[in-house]
Length: 141
Image (tube, rainbow, N blue to C red; front, side):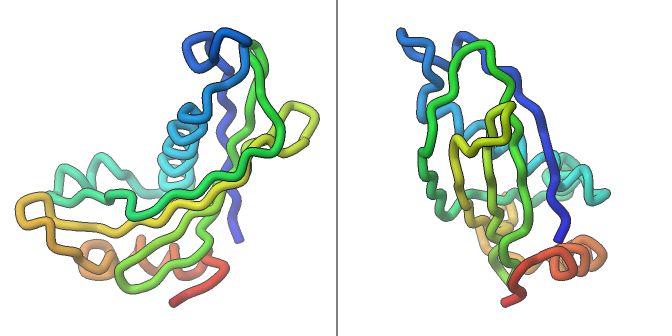
């Protein structure tokens, strides 16, 4: 299983008055992680969109373990948790610089045509991408 890593410097705008990272910022960091794993596996999400497809979030779940603060550097670890015909689930860990876990998360996505909003299997769009996800997934549905 391949695990992608993306470092994020905690910016002031991502925190509350106490300097603690706002809970919604972690969702954005998960998106950075998804973008990074797609790139690291050799594919291009922007190209998928130019081809007329998007990959909306169907579900997202975050578990907050240990607060992060302004000035720290977070590492977002992302992997393919499961991949099936119409759904892909990504797994995440967001780590402090000392390796302790700040957040764990999963997000589930599908691919739809922009013009019809109808789901389309990834294998019908890009067989190599679909095969790579199957290879890297913990579970193939």
